[in-house]
Image (cartoon, rainbow, N blue to C red):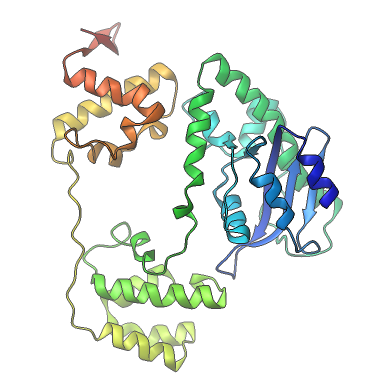
Amino acid sequence: FKKFIYTCLDENVISMDTEFVRNKTFYPELCLIQIGTSKGSYAIDTKKLTNLSILKKILKNKNILKIFHSPRQDLEIFFNLFRLLPNNIFDTQIAYSFLCQEYQISYEKLVLKLLKIKLDKTFQYYDWSLRPISQNQLTYALNDVYYLRKIYFKIVQKLKRKNRLHWAMEESKTYLNKKLYLNNPEDYWKNIYPHKAKNLNLFKLKKICEWREKKCMSLDISRKLVFSDKDLIILTKNPKQLNSLSIKYKLKQEDLIIMDKILSNSSETFLEKKPKILKNNIELLTILKIILKLISNELNISQNLIATTSDLEKLNFKNNKKSRLLKTWRNEVFGIKINQFLNNELKIITRKNNFFLEKN
């Protein structure tokens, strides 16, 4: 293993993937690491090789580009293992979005589009903690890094022709924010409220979520085994459901005492939503959506990659330092044009029943 890692240090580009299971645990259980190099594709059995610290030499090396496809879960594993994130990564899923209007394309579909090869996905939902691993399973796992290198070189070639490689490199960095991988028990409630339910008692929601997160983390068990999000919302709305839900989840007496104390609290704290600046300015919001659509068509890039409706609603032209639409490549393709339009330097015209942006 050590010898293999040192051979990887001579590489400029490597592809990486992981296989893991997470059905019953809070943290993903790493089962296999796959690495593709110029010399071949390799699998590391993390059930046999448990000391993986030397892998940090690759992850930390700024001179080696690490290719992933939709890497959030892979990076979460490395962060949990080493409390660090790799330097210099490239996400083929994001990168391909700069070449067409297809957003968040799957690896299987991308290989088919670029290489005309149909991958066998028999083991997509396989329990990779089981041993031994068959030759067919190994081939499946290695294909994930073997073809990943091939599609990387094709994508880079296309991006260079369009002068968009720096956009893809910049956007890939969004996964290197440690906050994405930190599990803070006090913050989990934000994943539920206000997206999945309204008018919830915020104090109770926060405290029950915090209790559940701490319990799951300490025991390394899945949230759904302790208390599902759905039932957590039901309980917050109707505390009388505690007894029936405690039977369903086989809660201990100590847990019931804690939850009963939370639910009996008379606090009536509710979340104050931050106002969305443009939500009520329908006309301006509509125009921004039209400009977004025109730019998406002109560049052949997905609208969702450039901006979401939420991004547009939060735009504050008096204090725009925090908006991602006015930074890096997004400012180049969208932010500058918004300001040009608002300053009457840009207009929307029609030509042959199609809309276009044109300078005044």
